[in-house]
Length: 67
Image (tube, rainbow, N blue to C red):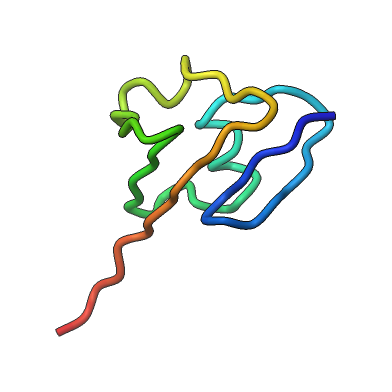
């Protein structure tokens, strides 16, 4: 079990996961979003290879269209 802090909210997951897997679980696939892990922006091309660890702090921002 690992704990992640996503936008200031503590969430628990059964095991370590990648940014890409987290995006799937949070239903972000197909949406435009940016992710920062422990103060560092993770480029989209690195989402699959970036493993999240217990205690990591993430900021997720989803782009919203409008005008």
